[in-house]
Amino acid sequence: MRLTAQRILSIHLHDERPADQRSALPAALAFWEGMDLDLTGATLIDFNLAGGHVTDAILNKATFTGDARFNKVAFTGIAMFRRAAFSGEAFFNEATFTEDAWFSEATFTEDAWFNGATFTAAARFGEATFTKDASFRGARMAAHVWPDGWRLETASEEDGRLIRE
Image (tube, rainbow, N blue to C red; front, side):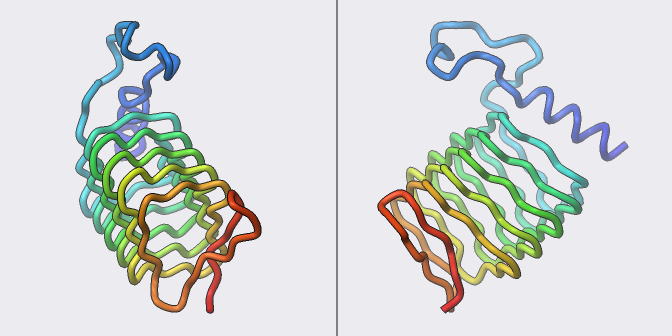
């Protein structure tokens, strides 16, 4: 039942229109445009929202078992992953966070990927735990808070990774 519900969300939160034509073309009937998502405390298995579009995304205290895929997701409202637990790899490559993104006290057991992600407002990672690598290559951030003992090591203007001090 849980996996079926996850698939339904994935289907209905995916906008097939090209990004540069969304305002001109009508959305498909299956797409739930402007949808808020509140999965506070949910257990999600191999969660895949890649390419999705959500307004406010509240996933505080959610448990992600297996890989969590948020590649190319457009978060147009707040994105809250406070105290979320990721047991597999967490993919946020090329995701767009239009408003504040909260990862405070989140736990990443495997690698966390934020390559090419855009944080238009604040990116808050205070007290987050990264057991393995966290990659932010090509990510753009307006403002950020890293967990204590971590810093962004940059190799160039567009290349960096989060490392322990």
